[in-house]
Length: 174
Image 1: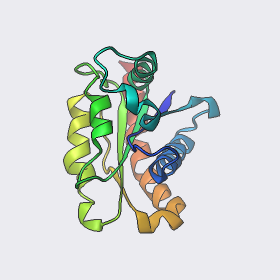
Image 2: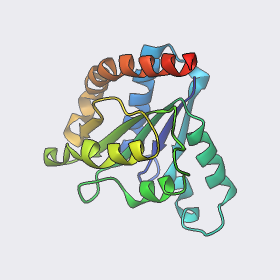
Image 3: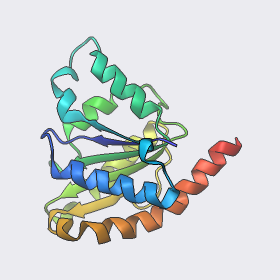
């Protein structure tokens, strides 16, 4: 089992990265993932290369990692009530149905609770369009919740891990 965390924050070492890593770990713990199962694609490292007409080797490697994931945590800060353009630029490089067979877990970090539906209304449809199975609910984390992130993530992981398990079993049986 491979768990890849894709972070669309343009700032290196962001809170979004920390929240996403915590979410990936929580889901992985519930699924019994080995420590070597986790990978991170931090798009802040790839930003200078994403709009190049010729795919940079690091971008190609990141795309392959994302396509090969069994579980993909897709995280972004909330910008203009949706995900970042950096994340969209990366995901636009994926071919149709690139995430077929992948359980994708959308996650947005936001400052205002009025943006909480953005994870379901904006990020989920993009992942579904790419062929992923997207368990319910996505994770919307308010910046004010970060001090109690463990509780927030644990409750969410308890809800989505059984759905991910069912999909992974179904995929193994197909």
